[in-house]
Image (cartoon, rainbow, N blue to C red; front, side, top):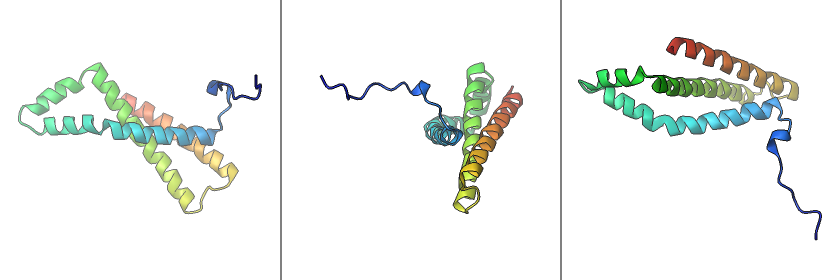
Length: 123
């Protein structure tokens, strides 16, 4: 038997750098925002009809709908904040390792603050 075979890696045991966490969350939020487009378009289309606005309003007053709305808005805000960070990096600002770590921490903290603020606003 060959003992040099790869083993199953436990990804939870790795210490992820803050820059990796920020980057992965940015990508995940983009994919989830893309997948949420049908829900948002359905709600918009339904609310533009005569009786549809009242129906959408009653649906959106439920706990699950508020949770989905909060998740979509939180992902949108985080994706925008991380995108602005990437725009700064494209302009040459914050490209060093230290400033990259600081920028990632700032993005995460602002994302958490905005998510909490959106939760307060929705509920």
